[in-house]
Length: 333
Image (cartoon, rainbow, N blue to C red; front, side, top):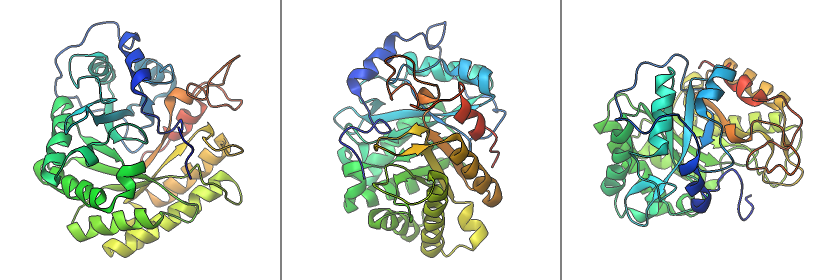
């Protein structure tokens, strides 16, 4: 399903170092204050990776598209049970904090994403659910977060013990942070979550985890029929069925607990392309069923490639600037 170093999930520590010199905001880091109420909805919070792919200034994206929320990636282990940006940059006092301050200063807010495909995973490096919850709590406290995304992939996803640890840690987080929104994001097949994904959802239900959104990444399929929009709808229907079965929800409630994180343009898989038309189809489905989340990977790529352009910083398809973000921002929950 995945290539060796997929663009969607690359937690490139070396590339992350470049973000330290990017002019994300004009001023240096300030103390993190409690965020003001953001206009807009966290249900539409596209990913931006500030350590990869020549990231745009978040406030420029906000001005150009009207988007108010971003999902910022990725928090990883520093080698132990301690969270850092890309596993190397401190939570506070650096360019990442400055970017968050700037987003909030412009009336927006952030979801922080933990995990991704590459790098050291907190779910594996923390030896217990309580220790993992403590690592998540450090991230929540650093930014007074309203929402946390656990992007569980690769070896963290394939290990049943780690899957349970993540679920149990999130339950602790939900108990200790009333009102916080949690998303669990994972890969999928065109028919819905694979065996590991279904097991993860079942473990969540068995643990009594009131997770707000089980989210799939419907791309890098390794083969599918029809458009990527229709394949995404098929995958979401499979996800809805899995969540409904595990939790005993009715249809409407099950839909409201699923989400999608697509990929714009050419994906990591040769011959697989997600178009703006596909994004419109996903938007229609999201609006019809009031799903928990409509996001995509990534803002970094939401522009046309120039001469010598890289898939890390452009979509690989003909498009107007921010064409995909402007579709996603139409979703209000």
